Image 1 (tube, rainbow, N blue to C red):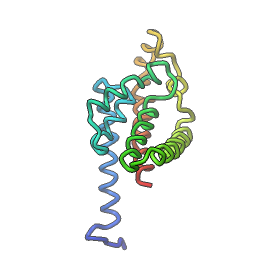
Image 2 (image 1 turned 180 degrees about the vertical axis):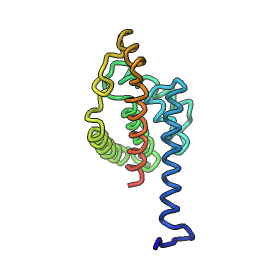
Image 3 (image 1 turned 30 degrees about the vertical axis):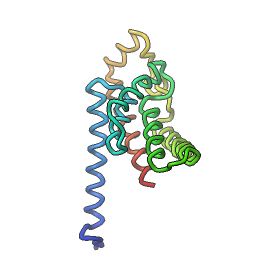
Image 4 (image 1 turned 30 degrees about the horizontal axis):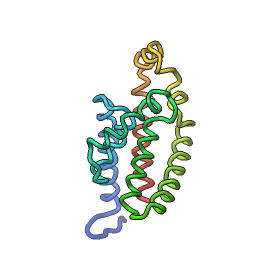
Length: 167
């Protein structure tokens, strides 16, 4: 038997949460497919929730795609998540010390969880080819790596952010 609280059962609340999560994942992937990079796609997915201007969100995260300026270092979906967690803690804590400490703690948890899912947080390791070169970028496109790898990283980043924010 499912217990009702304020007229909503656990099953109903879980169903609503799953729908919201599906919508966020879908938004991140649609944003990515429309031409935004991975970092932008994650940040834009949470901008409205965190009352962050979408133009600023897009502008501040633009250089972090492709593993930070297509250098294939830290994955853009990961750096986008770090920015979101920083924005979240900046809204939550008025003083800088708590903002930093909470952000650092959440970012470290995020990083550990992402690595446990994907084995790495570096774009180069995740994609497995050099997207800086024309040949490597072509290889990634031909083999649908942006869909197979990047979209999975986006989806997992969105889910992990939400999990960390929910506590």
